[in-house]
Amino acid sequence: MTTTELIVTATAKKRRVGVRRAGRRTAPALYLFPVPALIIYVAFFIIPTLQTFQYSITNWDGYSAAFDYVGLKNFGRALTGDTLFTNALTNNMKFMGVVVVGQTAVALTMAVLLMKNTKTNVFLRALYFFPTILSSVSVGFIWKFVYDPNYGVINSILGSVGVQGPGFLGDATTAIYWLAVTQIWFHAGMMIVIFVAGLQAIPAELYEAAEVDGAGPWKRFTSITWPLIAPAMSIVVAYTTIQSFKAFDVVLSISGNPPSRALDILSTRIYSTFANSQFGYAAAESVLFIIFILVAVFVLRRFLRLIQRGES
Image (cartoon, rainbow, N blue to C red; front, side, top):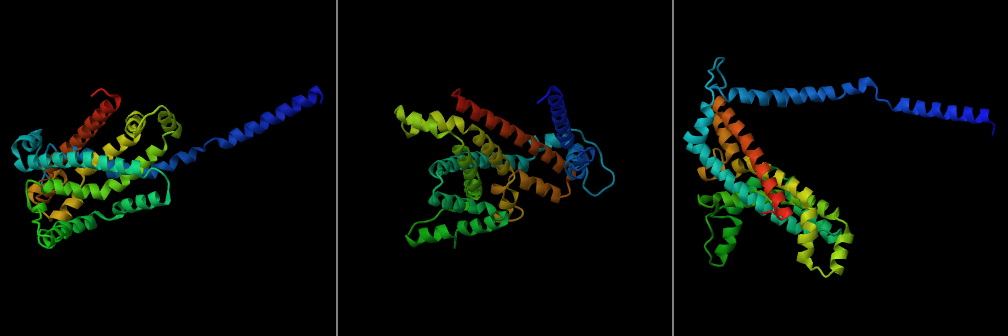
């Protein structure tokens, strides 16, 4: 091939590459496609959130055109002068502690046992995942029947063998913990799926090498599984923490409206405040609600990292 032919061929190739690159350029009109979604997001999330902060420093009742700005008075009232709010916060902390620890432990244990993709394990994963597709109201009514002290399933079985069953939701000191059991049953299946995905991403060669070195099951778990499951663990802890604050529908369906003082958590307390036309005060409670969730997620994830690094 002559020099001229080589030059022509190279030029043709450059032109073809240029045409392909030009074809890959994003048309400016395509940038307009996210605009409708962005407008909806701003209109129904950003603006209402900012309005919540605005109303939190007012005494607006939700109906009147006029209202007064009261500064941080609503926040001080919620944190120091409202026993209903502090009771709901205490209940929520107990509820969150049991749910985060219990649900994470149950889900991780089951995921380790069901990690291999056998037919039996796949079936059991689907079975454990089933409760998560039920509606929250359905779950609440199911467990309300289970916990019923008179004709509930558990007490009926215990009564048939002459054992006095517990009071469940009727016992103010333990009711919130029984509610946590319901929450764990409801969401553990989804956490199992997340953990299984994280476990299957760990290279099998690491376990084989550890086994050759004589490491037992517990040593392999603490040295390989636990450190490498950190990304999945972070997702589970964050999700579980948020869900423990948002268990509004489960609480109302299992306890009724308004819920008993023993089962009142922050989300139901805020709802009751809105229902009493104290919109300004409820907005302040909502702001505190957001802050508590952010702090709880941050602290738990930080604590988890310290444990996994062996610094705690």
